[in-house]
Amino acid sequence: MTKQKYKVAIIGASGFTGSELARLLSQHPNIEISHITSESHAGKAFSELHPQFLGMIDQKLESAAVIEEAELDVLFLALPHGVSMDFVKKWHHKGSKIIDLSGDFRLSSPEVYQEWYNKEHVFTEGFEKASYGQPELFAEKIKQSNLVANPGCYPTASILSLAPLFAENMIQNHSVVIDAKSGLTGAGVKASETTHFSNVNENFKAYGVGEHRHTIEIEEQFSCLSDGEVRVQFTPHLLPVDRGILATSYAKTKKLTTQEELTKLYEDFYQDKPFVRVKTSPPSIKDVRGSHYCDIFPFWDKRTERVIAIAAIDNLLKGAASQAVHNMNLMLGIEETTGLNQIPLRP
Image 1 (tube, helix red, strand yellow):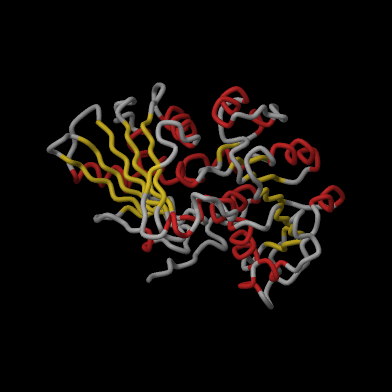
Image 2 (cartoon, helix red, strand yellow; image 1 turned 90 degrees about the vertical axis):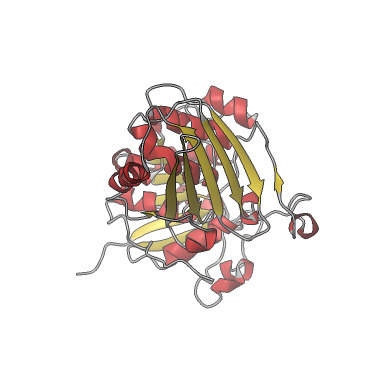
């Protein structure tokens, strides 16, 4: 029996996320990539922009205007923050399911968005329509949604690191500290002074201290899981590596526990979540590189009476492209693991 093919488009293919989406979708048994767009590179072959695809994805890049008349099942918006909202406003009536990989619909309201992104939102109705696309937590909502806000890479690792404890109401809500590190691709494909080789190579630095916009995204999702408002101290750092995120989360619990109880709680919470692996030793970013896995090591520090939860993901995949494909599978009623069983690349 021939498998049903769904027609999809990738809007914004010049960046790392767009190229990773194309890689995953081109090998997905239920998907046909009908259009790939880039305003600045329209007319070029996709493989000219991303030479690793030569002979595999050579189709021409098009202007996004082609989407207006196209009949598509899913639109992936791999666009910058502040740009996606315009396309969602223009295309939400088309009947296509939309997966937005920017931050434009991840937060709870247009007012919160404006406060943290310093930009007025142009499609406020989208906040009521959008589901937060964390499959391990909100799969049922995602299945019913036509607009999914794909989570940020830092929030994905951070939220999954402590979600089992918040779900069991075991965390002291104002005790959470998250120290997270990302590879350079998390900063996007466009070069800047910060991402210049000489500033990154053999260097390590914190940024966005006390004000990074992913802070509110993490706080809001933890608050949804808990019995009250959650405040988080979140500090991101830039690693001199290509890809990967390692998030170390610290929290005080409402009751004492043991390592055995903590491990079992995590194993029970994630037992039917195929892409979260609970480990018995700290993970590294190479354990998950090139894959959709999130590896988590929950540790009970009996000396300080704190939980230390360490999570590792590939920022371009579990933190972006493969998470979008996971959401697509749920939205289309496809088996959720389809097209996502890549084995991590190591070394």
